[in-house]
Image (cartoon, rainbow, N blue to C red):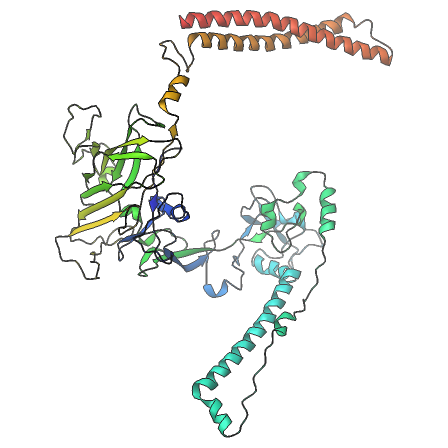
Amino acid sequence: MEPFVYYYCGCPDLNTGHSEDDRPDSFDSYRARTSLFSLYRLYFCEDCHRIRCPSCVQDEIISYYCPNCLFEVPSASVKSEKNRCARNCFECPDCFNTLSVVHDGEAAPNTASDDNGEAYYLSCGFCRWNSRQIGITFAKPTSLALQLQKSEDNLADNIEFDHLKEHFDKAADALLATSSTSAFLSLHGLNSMYSKFGLSLPPTQNIKEEDFNNYEPAMHKQDDDLQVLDQLMMLEHAHEASTTLQRSRQLHDQPALISNIRPQRIPLRVKKTKRCRSCRHVLIKPESKAQTSRFKIKLVAMNYIPAIAIVALPRKPWPFKVGIPMQFALKFTNPIYEEMHISLATTQLGDVDATITILSPSFTIGPYNELWDYDDELPSSQGSSKANPKGGDTPQRWEAGVYEKRDNYTCILVEVTPQKMGELKFPLLINYSYKAEDRMDTESNDGDIDIPSKSEDGSPEHDDGMRTSSFWVGDQTRHGLSPELHYTTIPPPEETAKAEKPFHPLARAGLLPQERILLMTIVGSLWGFVAGSYIGGRQSGLQYLAENAHRLPRTVQGWYFYHKTKNYKVMYGGIKRGARYAGQTGAVVMAYATLEAV
C-alpha cells in the first residue's frame, strides 16, 4: 500500500455532545474512520475559518435538468413527471445508452402510425436494440413520453399506488381539519363560552385507527413466481434472461426475460448549493444553467490550507523495517499568494507503535505563483536546495531538517522507527500563519473573495494582517483537521537477514548464476520437448496412414484396432522425437547460459 495523507474533521454540528476541539482517542475508533477525508473532498468556510467535510455541509437543490438534452425542468413539474425527462430522451434497456428516434419505412398494418401510414421507433446505435422487438412503435416523432405514459398509467402498480395515495390523503386531510378546529376553539376561549350558555360545540369528524387500517386494494395481483421460474427453466441461452441491473431499472414488474424489458425515460439530474451548517455561508454554488459547468462560488480547502504529500528518499524505498530508523520527506505545498510559516508537532496515541521524530518542526513556504503552472523552466524566487542526509555542503543553507525548498513547496525530513509489523499511523499537528494583504480577489475564476478574519468574539481584527490557524488530530485545538500517514513494515532485521540472498556481481533478475543456468536449461528442455512431441506425433500419424492405406479394415472391430494402433504410434513417435529435441535444445540453452554467466 502506498503511503497517503488523510485529513480529519470533527463535525461538531453532527456529533452531539462533542465540540470541534475534540479528537478521537484512537485511529481505529468509529468516529476516526468516518471523519477522515482526502484534501480534495474538503471545503473551507471563510466566515467560520474552519474546514468542512461533506457531512458538515447542507445541500440545497437549485435546478433540475436532463443530462441528455440539457433541458431545465421547473421544480413544480418534477413530481408530476416522476423525476424523469418529459421529452424524447430514453435510455436503452439493454445497454443503458441513449436511444434515437428512427423512421420506420416498412411499418406493419397493425402498428401505430399517423394518417400517412408512417411509424417511428426507438433504436440504440450501440447495441442495435430497437423498440420494434417488443412491439412498441409511435405515430409521431415528437411527444414520445406522452405516448408511452398512456400505457404506463394502466399498469397495475401505478393504479394501486394512486389508490393508496388517495386513501392516505383523505385520512390526512381529516386529521388536519380536526386538529385545526380544536386549536381554534382553545385559542379564543370558545369552549367555555359554549358551556356557559349551554350550547353544544360544532360537530367534528371522529377519526379512528380503524379508518387507516381498513384499506381495500384496488387490484389484486396474482403471484406468478412459479410461472416465471418455469419460463427461466425453459430458456436455451443465458442471454435471454435479464440481468439484475436491467430489472432494477424497471421496478414496477422487474421482468425476468430480456424480451419483457421496456425503454425508460432518462432520470433527471440536479445542481446543488452547499452551505455551512454553522453559519449558513455558501461554500459551493454552481451556475444554474445546465449548459455550463462554471461555479459562482467555490470555496474548497485545497485553495486555503497547505497540501501534504509523502515523498520517499533516494535509495530508501518502502517498506520500512521494524526496529530500524528510517527517514522520509513530507512535502508541503502553499496554495496562497503569501509566504506561509509552518510549525509541526506530534503526539503519541495508544495505537501508534513507532517513534516519530520531526527533524524540522518550523519552516517557511514560498508564495504561490500561477506562472509556475505554465512554464516549469522559470527561475524560482526561492532557489532550489536539497539537503544531504549524510551531511556535507549544500548549494544554499536552509533550516535544519529541510530536504528541499523550491517555488511554493518545502520538503522536510521525518524519522520513523517502527516497533511492530503492520500499518503505521500517527497524528500530526500543523500550525500555519501568513500575512494577508489588503486586496480583494474579485476577479477570480472560482469566485473566491478574501474576507478579513474575525476574532473569537466575532469582532474584526485590527492588527498587522497576520492570519494564524491550525489543524490536526492531536490535543484539543481549533480547526480540527488531521493527516493520517500509512506505511507498511516488514519483519525484523534479524529475520529478514536470513531470507536475504548474498550480493553477487553476476546475479540477474534476483537469481544467482547456478540458479539461472538451471532454470534456463529446464525451460529450454520443456520447450524443445513440446515442439518435438508435436512434430514427431504428426509425422508418425502420417507415416502410419501411408503404410496402411492399401489394407484398410472392413469390420467395426478392425477399425477399432486400426485407430488404437495409430494412437499408440503417434504417442510413441511424439515422445521419441520430443526427448531428442529436449536434449538438443537444453544443451544449447545451457551452453548459452554458461557463457553469459562467465
